Length: 431
Ligand code: HAM
Picture (cartoon, protein in one colour):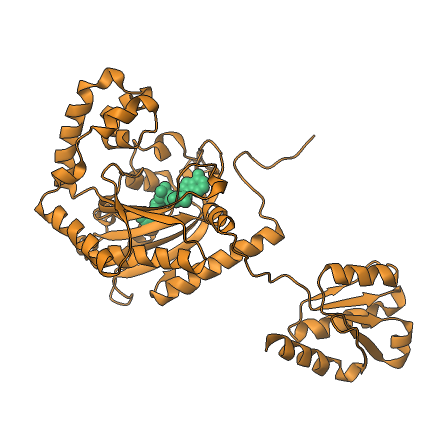
């Protein structure tokens, strides 16, 4: 029998994991500058939490959930995204209280699950870095959060990006627009794709997102949501654009960008990349927007009922980094290789290795007593800086021979001076 990972998942092997750590650490670094704390929620939630926030008629809820009944007959789902969970946690833990900084700002990093058709940069278990700001109604929050995302990409060396923004307006504007759109679409219903026909009655705004060929012309001629914003929504969007302009951030407005989750209002945005790894499809690597109303949906306080956030897919970010040809600094190379040629020297060898590790040096210990030449070759292959030879001679002399692989120089170090010697190596290497 062959054992394989489930479709749409991947193993992140140690060398690859280094790149992940690099990306995650960069996010932590940048988000700290904007004063965000980390919040970790469970990877499964009660089904209702997700449906309530994302919306019953979205693709995520209707087709992509990994949901099941647990042994206590509770309807559970693996989380498909982080916003719903974070808002649930915000309300449940009363993070709106005065003992917490307000507005509440938090980020999360972790796996998400959607039963999608896997392709380049689209998986069933994928990983998001997400951020949320709760309790600010100001357009400054929208812009500050968007530019934090852009800062993060800049720090990673990703420059070929496009920021696209739109406004979905407030509830009233959207409901006016929805009526106009349904009216327009129903007149051409018979020409729409199967999917769009279905969406026309369940989630008409999503028709604008259709990639089906037969829908293209219809969508192109559809009324624009921006023409239906009321004064309040229009002013808010103008303010967002004005602030982006003031920071000289380039962006495009796409009035057909509606996003696939129901909780959004006013500002929505996507950051897109055309990196070759995406097989010539312009791909969204980061997306988000404003979600006023979601906090009260979870019975949170009305005066805090405004949110803004985004999430980016780590797998997609790594594809974009690759396309820019940026080298991710390696952290895995070895400092010391402790060579050991016989069982007799084992006790001294393990002691030497522990001295090195306790001095902060990355150390590998030979465990199979291979020929000395083979061990040296292994040390070189692992990129070790030093080899510590532990053999019969060293055992008798109570000292260790240390070879600097870069210079070829060999030093005899008495055991009682070894820890100090390793500490000096560490000091020189971090200088
Ligand atoms: P989303 O657009 O569904 O938004 O996902 C955000 C990002 O997650 C996408 O742009 C993409 O990079 C990544 N992503 C989504 N699905 C997959 C997948 N199947 N495979 C690989 N990557 C994927 C949200 O999830 C919202 N919660 C964002 C948000 C936060 N809005 C407000 N706050």
